[in-house]
Image (cartoon, rainbow over all chains, first blue to last red; front, top):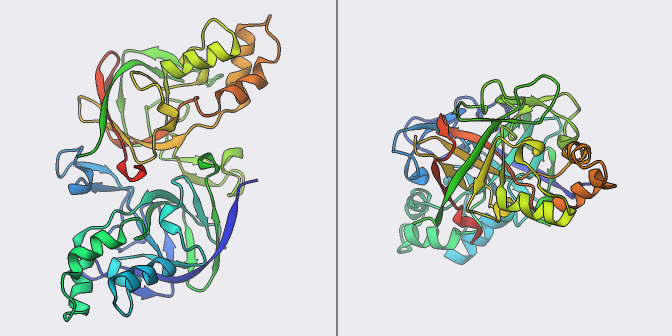
Length: 186
Length: 186
């Protein structure tokens, strides 16, 4: 029997505006292979960028960053360490914010999030911080200096995970989902 | 700069017979999204089985087990512990046998194997042992008792990994490939 934890789907979000990776809350989404249709990061493939420097820039590769997931607990920790009022999941471009599993970023790859519909997301590991969300946070708190770079440093290890859609289906904000931990890490 | 290791592509193999998962050596393969075309495990999706018991049996899900990879060093260790002459990668249904990175099974998910053609495989983690290869090994050494079950126990943590094709392209036996370690595990 695999270890599991129940978690709340605190919010579902999508980057559906042309000019930004910042996401907006939606009530529900129909996951497809590739992610959330219409989302900035949707696709079974993507073009290699600075995160995939082992490939020539622009090479078409499999997209392991279909869905970005954060925990509200880790967002609160980042806010506390940055001494700002709050860090919202949308500023980080998150697609899903979970509540009830604070240590989300350390979730072992190969773990799953299983939704009441039967839909499932496969954890591909930590989402390494970059400066873009730091710039958004800096703009929200213009009176605090150096937030862009301190976000990158502070959020390492607590900025959430990326994953791929393992089983398509509906996900609904407010629902309870089940985290199934990959026991090969025990 | 990510840590990396050069490894030898000791052999390439495919399960291209109807009645068995046992693989046969081939000189080269053209990786596509989904794996090695014609191979038993080829496909961007698969049907959920006992390894994916979080889904109803038979549900179509993303295939994270496209390619199975072993190291010849770990195969030798398993043989030594089972007190048999050898354990061949084909008996384990491996698609690729690597030489030069003995601790392959502990490779962090998110690590890559990059081939001279530019093709790349993304590590999805340990391939947990099951009894099927144990039965093959038992048949090879009929005079030694209980090999089927002792294989499962002995090979845990040294039976190799599974992965997905991240970038399609040719792979050739005898070539040197580069293992790029996922540094988020440091």
